[in-house]
Length: 156
Image 1 (spheres, rainbow, N blue to C red):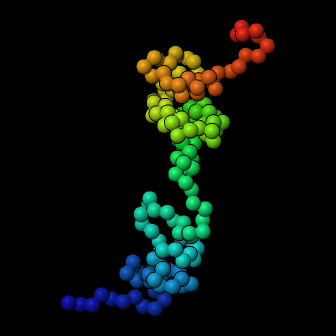
Image 2 (cartoon, rainbow, N blue to C red):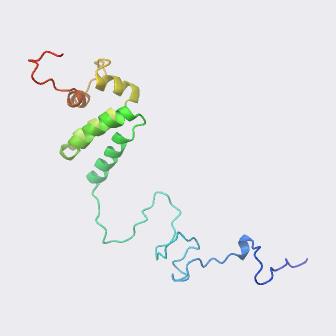
């Protein structure tokens, strides 16, 4: 068996095996993962995509309702169609702080409905079918219906 040839000092051709695993010289070896992200952080590289990369215990903790509300706001403004992003996002932004837990449940149920149906129902292009009509859906529709002022209730 022959030994693999070692590159000469200064040789620019290196293999992966030649790369040092100590990528951040300012970080102690036990916290350095060998992956550099452009900063010299003492936080080890984490491979779990669902893990929190903020390990500082002094960071402000978020309560579950806060996280739920933020997720709902994100979902309301990232529906997939710009029209629904505007309509549903406007409703959620205007009401999110005052919604109760049952309201949040109802809003989540509405947001599970197909985008095309929601767009038709919320704009009034199509009446809301009785089997799909919920108080939250009607509340959203009412919020999005333009108010006619000074017309005596008659639409012009």
